Length: 303
Length: 303
Image (cartoon, rainbow over the protein chains, first blue to last red):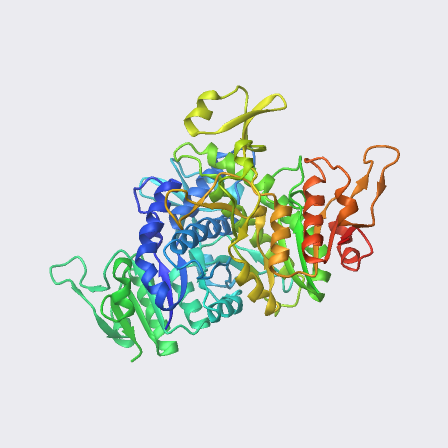
């Protein structure tokens, strides 16, 4: 089987944990141990979140005052380098030495007319005690209140195209484990003034949507979103909470899930199942072997 | 022809220039314009230096005091992400949209018994006003004097193996422009205690040596080291200075070049020509088309 797995950002760096390189690596080792049996038996493409990591790089870039802080597309590319390296090394350590690996930088096209650009929603970078209007004006940032602080927000447009989808597929056909589309891909768009010129964008693309597109591009048999919860629940947080084991995309789409929680994962799973007719699953990384076998997680099928 | 080009670190960020993202991008654009005609006509693998960039990330990582600074292997992986992204985007903007690109993270094995580990020589990271003995002891660093300041030094071991050489070759065979081995690769070694376990190393691998190994691995017809000087000179800095246009590896090896200037490039060119019987060249990035044609630079052949 050809399996595409999106690793949740929190699988690699949990909220509240110190963001050191050692902590990241320990979490990558845990993820690698869960993934190794799947990687040994199936064709595997791995994507991963980068929320906490891009936040850290933004803070570091901001802390060094001699050079202007770097834009989000460049910081995103840096996190693809850092996280891809750790995953490639740690997963490689658990597999036969002959197994080929490739971690590819991934650029993703977004639409400059995406409505997300009118309504930035993703918090990034340092928190400010005050509204920081001057900073916002100076840098052209949008700033919103985040709890008791103020923070920069950026748009989260939909992914339109993954530029490297052919190399990813060629490598899969050779049995390579491919790590790509980290953080939802590096956000880029065609310049409105200079035709055919691709430029970076200060935005964050949802990793689960992006990986759904990737799974379609590489004609995956199965698309798994691996997180720290064992599946999708109805009536979550109430005494009636119950996990969905198997569901059609039509029925799943009839329920409401919060944008901040399972919403994007559910939408990405339904889109993949509807368009391809193949299975999408949402579940715990620790259960991934059973999810591949269809025996754990929430499994979404066309219908 | 299959051409491997090592781009000098100074081609992307010159000494004394502000290290902003915009300055880096402008330099990448200049490099891309020089490379585009070659990329359009030949199979192309590009590697690049990362000295100034890894220095910047070390300073940023050091400036943010909430989280312990990241080790050099991880910072190197970050620079592969950042620089690979900029090159892929800017070179892509000059070529037909169908041209496939792949920027691969590259891990390189070094030998834990390499004599370089006994004699660290590469300066990295911030400068310190004092000997910083406490810092050195605390972090296990070697510190040496660099002009009037003190600075961390790390070893520069030889590259033994490029782990991703098969994916690089497979992508080339499909006509993909491959960007890889940035900064000489991410330095790694097998753990002396845990067998078959690859770990990161605090070291810097010479980019020109590493790319020579890469050029051998992918069976390149031509290996070019593109820098800001138009070739190798005999009696450089004297009134007798004269550029070498064409030379055998045996004759070139009979001359002495300083370790800090042309030494590593000359050694890498000679090694490639000797082992493969194919041409290596050292010259200016601006002349790269003429170098490919054998009409510029210093051309080294077996003999």
